[in-house]
Length: 65
Image 1 (spheres, helix red, strand yellow):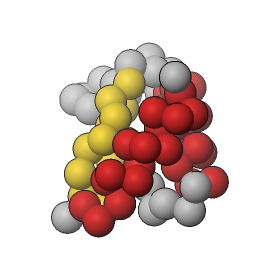
Image 2: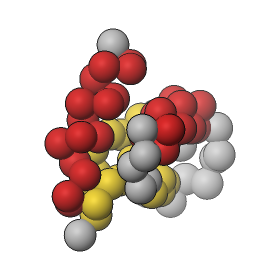
Image 3: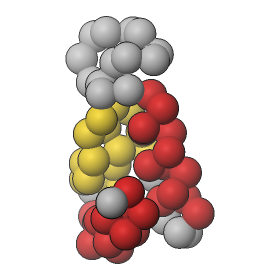
């Protein structure tokens, strides 16, 4: 099962978070929220498999704060 671990309001932040998680060796999905198709300013969810959620949170907190 895929779990949302991060939501952002722009594509740039979503890309940065996704890249950080992938470099840490995690499997990542990104999807848009709602029907807005604006690739720059739409909302995005970052998802991880349930088994990697704790590690994903740790990686994001240590890299984004």
